Image 1 (cartoon, one colour):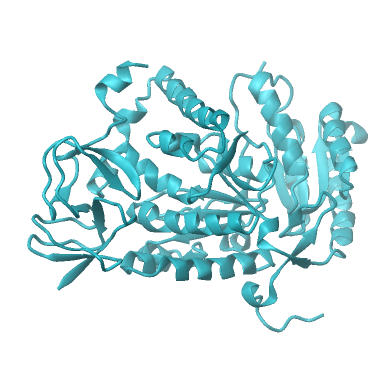
Image 2: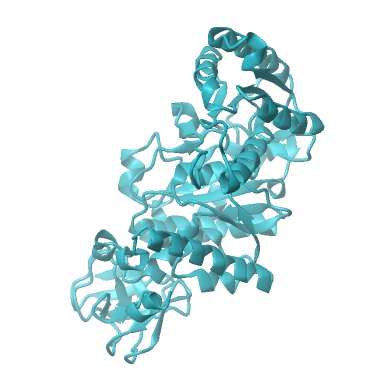
Length: 97
Length: 394
């Protein structure tokens, strides 16, 4: 069974899964162009990596950089707080004010 | 002429009320605009006595200074001149304020009557009776106006979101963004506000600004509110995304904010408006304003927006009194559960539906509403307006 995910922009590094997806599940982007295998359980509306990313890379969703990876990410990984952080809400950016 | 078929915007075209100012009204309401707190209850009783009148009440009086005074002047003038008003009864306990607003309506050739509490020697019961009689006369005169054809490019839309969930950012707001792009290519106007919702993606918005001045105004507006929150001891970056957002899959403030600003589509940003300020021309505009929906919508109404597109995830009943407020959800459960609140169900986008087709369907729906089809907010009487305060009263 293939699970559908939304890729909001063709350049996006991640897609948002539209149903809870088990590890090993096949995930297809809504434009049909990308198929990945989930490497972990992905809860509904969470993000799955569509390509490999190195640690420290900017990550795009919806055509917008939504943060920086804090670990290397492999295509099919669940992308969330354990491997992505905000570039805006960092402790040092707050103390600059 | 008797209409026997439902209004179909796409077939019949848009029709509305041409005002002398050149703006088009999508409604022809009798508006009872109360200008002072002292006269509010008289205005409220009168509005209850004139079915279908729309009451907008400003609850403050003297002692407004600085930003509050500027905003009050802007908001009350903007609302008095709203294109969806076919006629206005102004009610006031302050003659100066009444005369200021009356002069503006007179210059625009609008149908109105102004009543000051002095006129009835401070007798509140007599004031109510005067408002009712004036309202009845004006409503009858307004009912002789009729709709004429107009185009999408004649309209100004407000875009708003409230009680969002994961479906909002990835589906409903994107749909509003697509719609916004189409309005702007047709020569129309769109306003997005709720400044704090841009926090995290303000640079993305600044990159879309028409000029360096506009880019700078966007960054300044966000920084000013962030500093305001910090002074009040609120750490916006620390609490966003919140725990529920994170459980639902949002990882960073940038991601959360990108869902909110998806409502603005991809157009160039023409300028930054003060709360309640009317845009100087067509295109996409931002409004620097409070993020709470009732206050935010009143700012858009004052700016002259005729219709609001309002996305929600778990449901939100609030509507503007002056702008038909089209409730849009991509959450299938919400659409089903709140079927007399949600005007437009776009939940097929959460199942891989084609956004262009859904945008076509939304255009048809909006055209029908613009041409007279009532929103559930109008039918259920959920409309109100809320006036922001920025500082202390003297």
